[in-house]
Every structure is written in structure tokens, then in C-alpha cells.
Image 1 (cartoon, rainbow, N blue to C red):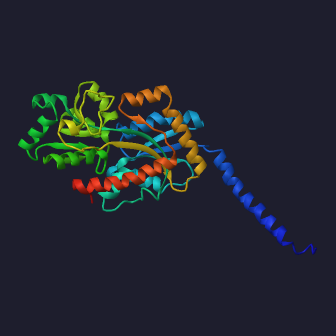
Image 2: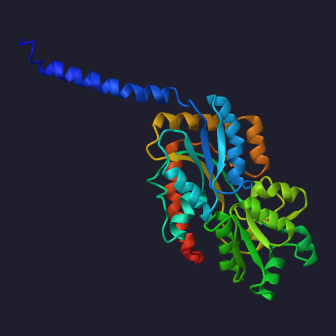
Image 3: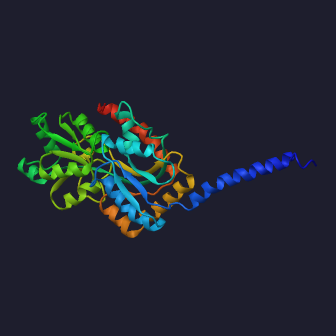
Length: 335
């Protein structure tokens, strides 16, 4: 064998060695992840259900991985600002999104254009929880107007067309769309007032400056329990175990088929290493099964999940199809 000219086998072996060497730093980095703080972007203001769920998980993930998991609120445009930030973030496992049925189900049909693709630009990690929305009114205002239930509210709204304001956590959220469906099916007119999250919207509801809101149950629950908000109905197909005496919108308003529930899930930028995605999913599932965390979420009306990335991806696909029909039927559109 000529020592100056290596054989084909030697060349292949050398190339394989070089390839392996090139892969080693990346594999080593992934196996040692995380080596610095990890960010969970919440695309809404503090105080809403998206924020509450992220803050419930963050300390558990911090303990599991030995690095801080911090919540970063980036509100605006119905969740699109925060979602876009994560879609364009580095694919290194240090940025995640607490996505919602709005950012990854409704917005594609509701907005003329999105700054991200909810399917192509993200790696689904896991569904965190599903929750019903709840139709609420300021309790003092409800008593003053003698509105005790959904039927009373509909009668009042029809007698005062255009004079009622409907608060939401932002354009395109399930809170917004639940209200639009209610308006569409009852034939009433209310002015939609979008906020940058449930927190600020609830503040105005508690102050009595807003008339009605179809909030996510977990964020509304403390105020319902305190008697500051009156719950008229839940928007799910079945009554909530957290509020068993509160009827569904369908039964209270005699609106057959009315359903507009919410869900929240963790996503990473597309291209994030699968082993990081899988490790996070496993730890979220463990956290959601901790008795204290599970009991806390259930008491607030949230149903914990923790499913696989593949199952969550299928849910997103099906929700985009479902909500396209709902948005079209509601007539809601946002530029």
C-alpha cells in the first residue's frame, strides 16, 4: 500500500471520525443542558391563566433541572408578539412559549396575516392544561341591574343595544371568541374591548368599568369565590367540577352546541433538539402529577395534561381546523 495515498477505507474512517468529532460538542452541550437560566415567554400580561400556569410550572422545572426557569411576559396583539419572539429565538432549548388556543388555534383564521406559522415554526412540547371559560359580571353591577343569570343578561343587552362593553384578554383569544360566539348566537351587540391579558381586563371588571367577560376559569375563580364577580355560565360542553352549580352557556341560554374552551401548552422554536424537548415534556408531566400542583390546578378549574409532543402536535393540527370554522361562523376578523 502506498503510504502517501490513503485507501478509500482510511478516507471513510477519517471522515467518520471527523463527523463524530463535529457532533460531539453538540451532543455534549445537549446532555449538559441547561447550563444557564431558561426563559418561558408568556404572550400576555401577568395575572391571567397563561401566566398562572407558567408560574406554577417554573419553580418545579427549576428544581428538576437545577437552573432557573423564569417567566417573561411579552403581551400584545392577541399573543402574537410573544409567539413571534419564540418562533424566531435560538433553537438551543433556552426559550419556550406558553402557547394557547389563541396563538396556536384561533389566530391563523382570525388574523389576515401572522408573523409566525403555528405549525412550522414551533416544536410542541406538551399540553399543560385545558380549561373552560366562564361568563362573569361584576357582582355589584349585576345586583344593581337585577341580572341574575344568562337569560337576564340577554334581555338587558337587547334592551340596551351597543351600550354594553365586553372585555377580553386580547384579539383572537378564546376569551374574545367566546364572546363573539355569544353575540352571534344571541343576536345582541356589545363593544369588544381587548386588553393585553386577563389581568388588566379583570382589574377593570372588578372596578365595574367593564360589563361582561368570558374569562378563563382559573384566573376568574379567586374573584368568583370572593364574591366580587358573579359567574353566570361556563363555556364548555359540560359543567365544570370546580363550579358544579354553574350551568353551561348552552343550557343557561338555550344555545345548543355552544362551546368555546381554552387550552395552554408549552412549545419551543422549531429545530430545538428533540432530546431537550422530550426531557422538558417528561418533567412537566411529573410536575403536573405532583399532588400539590394537581390539586391547585383542579381547584381553579384547570384539567392538567402533560401529554407527549406528538399528541400535542396532533391537537394543534385539529384545533386549527376546528377554529377556522368557528371564526368563520362568528364573523370575527382582526386586521
